[in-house]
Length: 374
Image 1 (cartoon, helix red, strand yellow):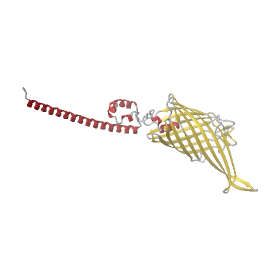
Image 2 (cartoon, rainbow, N blue to C red):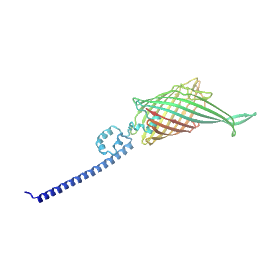
Image 3 (spheres, rainbow, N blue to C red):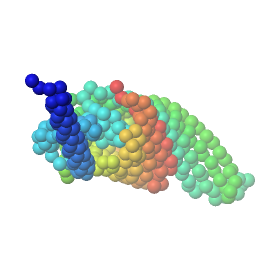
Image 4 (cartoon, rainbow, N blue to C red):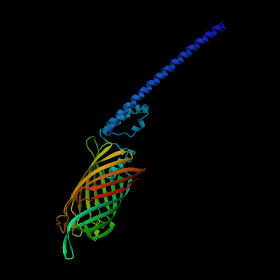
């Protein structure tokens, strides 16, 4: 029979062995945890490197943000990502629903470089102001004496516009718009440094209803840009002018344009080429116009963007009863600076200022708009 002392010794030995085994298990668990942490750090670092490389190539994955902080899940879907990468060529830009709401994409859509998704509607009310100043020499008769003078013609125009865009299937878009214009013309005749005569006249009226359609002709790749074609018809339903004041309406016009966009986030480069042909009305036919533009859109943040654009064009001489009117051709160039910011879900605030580079262009233009997406 085992004595009490012996039993105590056996219990003590068993306790020591058990505690030793527990400590050994704890040490192995801690070692495994450290190895898992090291593995997670390696995976996170690799994901950051892959993301940086994809960012330079223009490849975007909607689920990338969800991977950060969850390397175990990222490792589990790495194989699926590799298969997706095979289907996406380098340079392919994928815009998901959230990214399409960024100020950069919204600005590009507003200016026609990108199109809306099918079923999406965008309504854009806008208000614009333009100022044009022209000077020409004149002769002034006063008290039987003829003086050499100068006539200033200052034109202020305010345009309220309502545009609607609807995304359609097959990478296409319907576009409708109607403007309303108020214009004031001030004529001041100066002799020396003193005004000899001054008149001011203003008129207002609806502009031409315009209807257009646009379609994406080419999707962006590693070297090629997105290419959007557009065809627009100005119905000529508006008012052409009154009392010598032009309201820029009343003539049917057909215009076609191509817009190209190449993105290198956070910058998008945009170029365009357009041609407009006007139909004859009351023996008057405005000259055909061709114009081009180039600029860059910069994403300052997901909610704000900046754009710099340079446009130039040439309009042929107008015709009266089929005969060209000498000196009626125009060369115009404009430099535009604009900015956009998201002020509410689906609502973008857009402001732009343009400066004329030629005598035929508006000296100053300011435009404020509020595109709202449904």
